[in-house]
Length: 184
Picture (cartoon, rainbow, N blue to C red):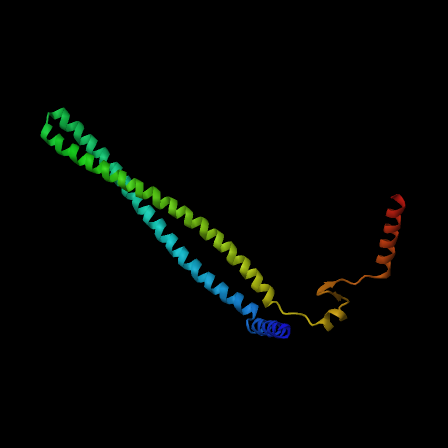
């Protein structure tokens, strides 16, 4: 039974290794970037549409404010002239305009908040996209063969390339360590 379990684990490990080789990380990352760019373009279009709706509502609010001021002036004239019936019709229009203004104001505030939320989300997503692009750039950078690095005077230690160390650097470091230990 233990042999079958071990064989199963070995097969799974080999299968996962093959999948890792097939799924090139750089290609997957580039595909993710393309998908993210499409999502961001859609988000930018939605945000632009929301901002346009907000501006239209703002313009409509200003028009209603202007209309209410005109109605007030007309009402003043009607009351000065004793035209009560005409004033009643203007009062009705003023009430309707005020109610419409209140409805549009609520819509405008909601859309303004939505536009702000969209703007924040868009900025965050753009930062994520930039991070993905930087990671993709790391995969896209051509690797320098180890033989070229060795010729350039660099040694590879655990996958990390370090600059050459000469005898003078060793002597100075040795003296510093010796002095540090004497003072302790």
